[in-house]
Image (cartoon, rainbow, N blue to C red; front, top):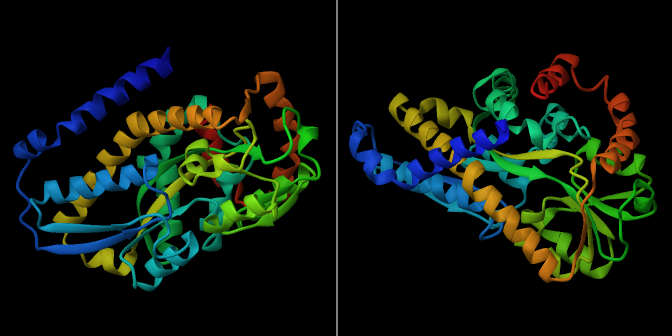
Length: 341
């Protein structure tokens, strides 16, 4: 019931965002300087993440009456997550987006979200609140600032599921021996090992070819992300393992951000918050449903795990937590766990 109320509230928020021009007319006019900045990400066209950043651009330009212009570079046009975030660090790019697993290249603390089953879909609203405006958000603002970055938006990525090209999976044992694509996250690699798979780090832009050529047998990712990248053309099996959660973090170069006038910072943050609410309540659920339907039409067999089957995956992957207990601060782990109570 609480979930239904949350979704209803989110829908109201989203519908109000669709009436953006009318709302903007009531808001104080932006009287700051003219600006132009770039945002680069790796997500393909049509994906809910891509649409969220397009909405962000629309809102920034609308709220500023065109005085602030945003140039968005999607689909890894300017490089991988790591390359883009390095650009933001160095200042050659004003804003970049990276998935939380790939943020491990810059700080191992982002790996906390990779711990298997540390979060669950039923507690998403609590997690959102903490990362957007609560203790988790404050914690990771300090982390981002320490590496020369300013967090702007934690866009939804979703829960990852295991998929394969040649083997049906419904039990933990079915994963053994598979060559699975992973990111550079040490936690993600360890999850693969603990499940007796062979982890193979592959850059996102190369995964389709790796699957097609049999370099890897499968991957763990969200249905929308894989569907948008056309992985359904080569995949055959999927299982709703929901083994970890990810976000797409939009970061600004901190030195550039700190030089912006306060009114520009405020406008950008407001636009980010509104685009985020729209993504979570409308874009993501719609894209998830479209991706699942697309998988089924492509002939992919999706095994929906029940609570008992999911519990077997939780138990099998729990030893990963022990391996990282000395690498992830207990207070950070507790902050995440607090959102699940």
